[in-house]
Picture 1 (tube, rainbow, N blue to C red):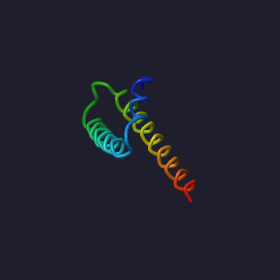
Picture 2 (tube, one colour):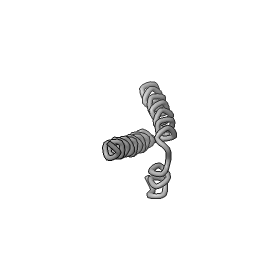
Picture 3 (tube, rainbow, N blue to C red):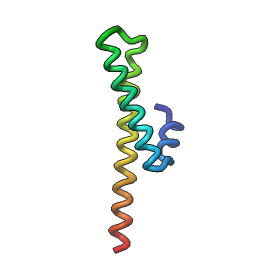
Length: 75
């Protein structure tokens, strides 16, 4: 994934990231299902989708941790 893509993901709202993650998971499931019946045109696409999903999960976790920290600091 390019650094511009990561920067765009980092700046997205958590709701947008969750939506994009659901779409990626759905597409990944479809590719895996398709792979069992016939060879894929580009098998590396599965790896790229998995990695992008992991990046999104990381950013979601960071945003959640930052939110908890800010709430704890307010108390």
